[in-house]
Image 1: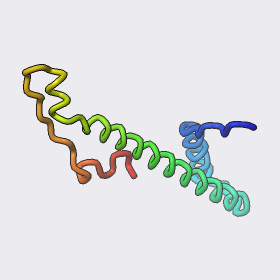
Image 2: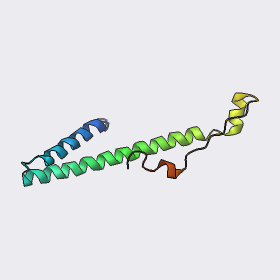
Image 3: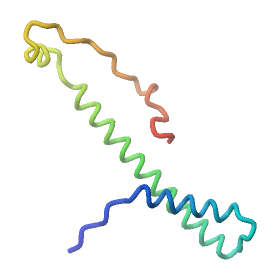
Image 4: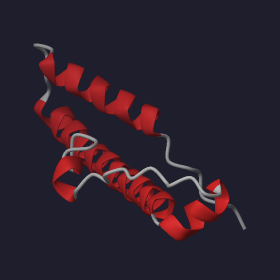
Length: 99
């Protein structure tokens, strides 16, 4: 049984950029353009999904580290009061990765 190959973000982005450059050239064949357009849409979808996945992972990591209760932090720090920090609201995180 073969394990699936991990998504190569940079490779997919590079291929999408090559397709975009091809369309910007003056010699665009209609049939070839249709094939390249379809591939470009596939790549764009894969890139968007990968970015959404990464954004979800980042959010889970943030939640995990912001879930530390002040009582737990106080136990670690002794008698020192834990520093209170503000966590960003969802509005502050919009467009985190240009989505």
